[in-house]
Image 1: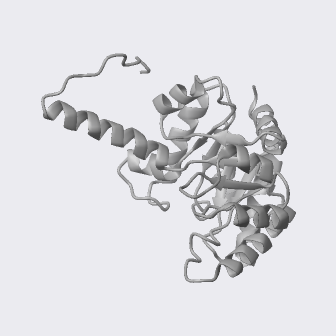
Image 2: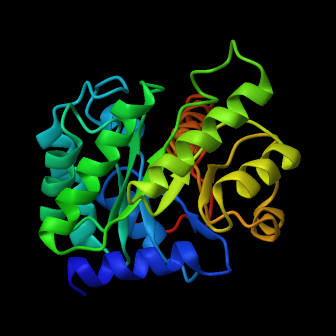
Length: 257
């Protein structure tokens, strides 16, 4: 498929009645392992995980060219649409999206870092305009950090802020609104009611309802961020500890690489 076709499919998956689950990956081998599963309809990269792979902390510390090179390698290794985590746009959301599209990316997260609303909307508008200029119906998953950076505020304030920002992002051309946070069913329902059915995307965290319930509530997409890499690294540490303690390799190891 062309990049435009992959982007069209990714937008369709967001709008479909079924919840879109995207398991986050960070390199080619993690991507191909997940893409080989029958349930995989799309993939998402985790910016935190890619940065960690190269020894950088999260938060746009990794050089953009290095991040995009890995994302491009992932795109070329799989047949499903790939959504990239582009942090806050690396100082120029429009140019970063243009370069990501050049790597075959079908969609992306751009976070607002709780910047003033006009600045956050301008970044979304720039990303959408860049995709339009490339002729790609980009699936922009505009992220608001209303909860992530609003821990000192009341719950009602965070919900109202997320809804205001989410609506503004959709008006600026975003496909969906990513609201990461650790909250339960009542908050999810209020966010969907305020932002729109099949417009809210969430991250799987303790306390967040199960996928089947999120689908019933009208959530569009569920991703898992850096947790997938942490699970893989935890399994590696556990294996190494067992081997150091005199254990042996378990039976049934799958040759996924």
